[in-house]
Length: 117
Image (cartoon, rainbow, N blue to C red; front, top):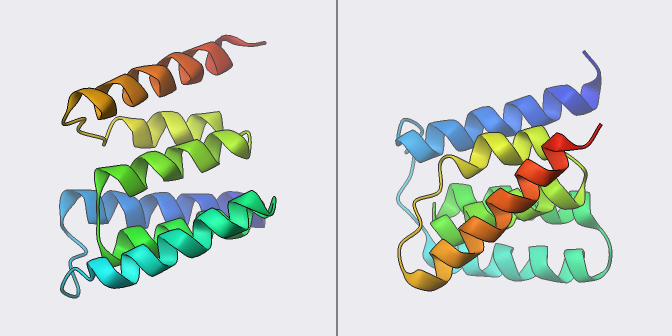
């Protein structure tokens, strides 16, 4: 297994643990998450998608939220990691009509990408 695959699998494990609440080592820190999310957004706008993903994962660890998780799914798609996006999207609980619309749109994109040869 190559190094990239190990990093992705490790990140998915951390996220899975966070989603299930097993890895709650510290108190949620929404302020730190906001700072990290802003850094991730800037990095993404600069085209530094992999670095943006790392910041999003750190933000999620600081404050697990559905919005951050949805951004992580989007970064996986940006990186062509459709299987990883597909795995994580199942952990998103869409609350509110805007979030449900975004989730449906992401689900359709993932299904279309997975259907490609």
